[in-house]
Image 1 (cartoon, rainbow, N blue to C red):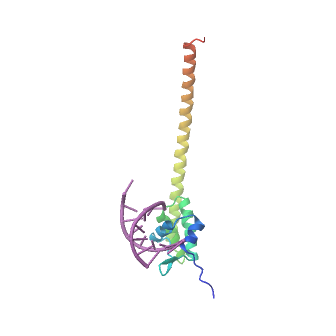
Image 2 (image 1 turned 180 degrees about the horizontal axis):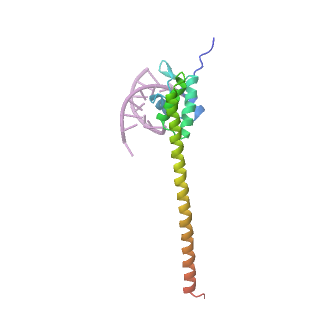
Image 3 (image 1 turned 90 degrees about the vertical axis):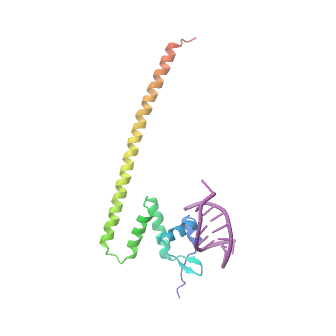
Length: 137
DNA sequence: ATTCTGACA
DNA sequence: TGTCAGGA
């Protein structure tokens, strides 16, 4: 007699460091679908696994909608090559976006370097000028 | 004591 | 997502 292994909402909030509000929010987004015991939510192992993937997806910068699509892949019988293709497209898009951001950041950093160098050069020039215009005592 | 739904200075 | 309300 397997004991129905369920998690209460607080079990998951403590384990994953999220708030109950977040779990209910994800439920509204249909990312999680806990069953009910009366009013209380009962999260099954499946929900726990999904939550893991959701949080991982967030860390990767995916939107909840994109994460939802990915999660659906795990449900469907598999073989939905069409959806897998969509997922691969998303991954590609994400990669490109991140690479573009990295490029922009590197450019900005390079600009800052040159600006700083010029600023220091001017500062040096001013100090030299002041030194020459104000004789030592 | 806890969770739930609904709402938004 | 936070947070507060008001009920179960």
